[in-house]
Structure formats: structure tokens, C-alpha cells
Image 1 (tube, helix red, strand yellow):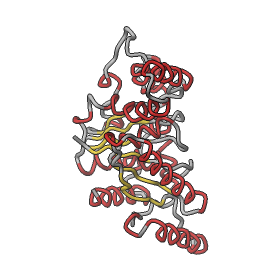
Image 2 (spheres, one colour):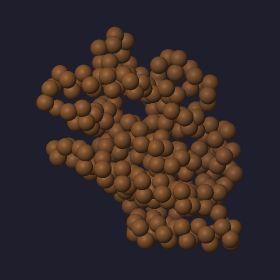
Image 3 (cartoon, rainbow, N blue to C red):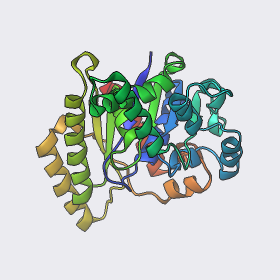
Image 4 (cartoon, one colour):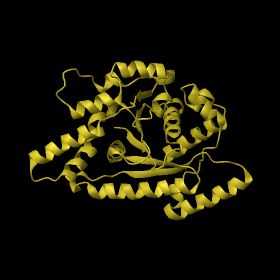
Length: 294
């Protein structure tokens, strides 16, 4: 059974999706791993980093997105059923070993989830609503991934910014998490907030379902070699080192590189679209470093 790794930060705009799709691509391309990318963000950035909007629209029309699998968990008695294998898009970007479970712009209805869990709490009587909710978020993605988990060496979960149901479920399901951050104060606050949330999430789960997720590393993205900003960045990074320890900080930093943005326009990770660029080389080096950490 492979590793399940979430990419998360409470703050948006720190490069979570870019990090996820490029690490996944490096694992498949450079290391021959079988990798699945799961897009948990309704902005579908990971999906559109690996397939065109036209291809996504076709798959959404055919109900071949994550939303359908979540609907099956919420409504297990629905007549038409698709297996997760039917929804996964294999060999995205024509790369063997790199698969995608597309996200959706409308992943689930919070009211439907709350109503279902309330009914369960009433039916069970002795259990309070919070316990029922905690159990649901713990098993939601686990149930979805269970049929195919042994088919992959790595399953990478691209989480939405903030702390919604799917992010909590992703953290409860994962073995490790990667924490991308820009070297600036607000991004660092996002690290601290997520760490506190994970600690509370572990406390909220029942002893028999102990969460064993661990941080794989903090990755600084969008670093700049400019002398003035570089000095400021170093101060921010030193602050993070003081809070979390040097061993938690990945040595490889992802530089600002226009090729990364251009690659998104091609619906392809930079490590495929511009393999000789500074961004691509950094992702290749980072992937090797993360494998060593594992």
C-alpha cells in the first residue's frame, strides 16, 4: 500500500497545486512510481494543470469527477454506479504512471451532509453530533480511495486553502502532509494555524481511530534571488526554523520562474513543459529530497 500525502496550508496562493502536480509528475517521470493526484479544491486548479477545460467539461458532463464519488457516499442507494476506476483519468499528459482523479467546481452540498449526519445522530441516540461528524470526515476519503489504494505508490491530495470538510478528511486519511509556504509573514501564519488545527483534529478523533499523520516537510515556494528581498526572505525562514526546527524545512526552495505560469496555460506541469527551466530543476531536486525523507 502506497503513501497518501496531503499538500495543505491554511492560506491560499502559496503554490500548493503547483507543488502537488510537479512532485507527482517527477515521481512518475524520474522515479517510475505509480502516482494518483486527487483534486480536493473546488477551484479545480490541479485538474486544469493536467487536462484542458474542454476535457474537464466532457468528464463533468459524464459525471466522471470526485463529486460523483462523494455523492455515492452520501447516497449509497442511487441506481447508476460508477467505480472509482471509471472516474480516474489514466496517463494524464501522456505520462505513464501519472493518473488524475478530477475535482469539481461543486463538490458537495453542506446542507445535505449536515442533514444526513444529524439523522444518524438521532438514530443512534447516545452519540452526539460532533462524534458522528468526526467519524464521517475520518472515513469519507478513506472509503473513496480504499478500492484503488494498493494500485499506487503515491496518492497526492491537493487540498483547498482553509479548513473545510474535505481538507479535514484528507488530513485524517493521509500518512504525511507537505506544507508549502511563501517566505512572508502571512504565509508563515498559515503554517502555524494549520499545525494547531491538526493538533485539535487528532484530539477530536476517538482513541481507537488514532490519527498518525506526520509533517513531511515545509517547502518554501516563489523564493526570489533579489538581494534586498532575499535578505528579508532569510529572516522569515529563520523564524520558521526557530518555531519548527531545521529538520522540518526542506533545503530545496522553489524559485520564481515564469515558465511555471506558462506551463499552466499549456495544462501541463513545468517539469514536462520546460524541463530545463530553473523551476523544473528545483521540483526534480525537491522530489528527490522528499523521497530521502520518506
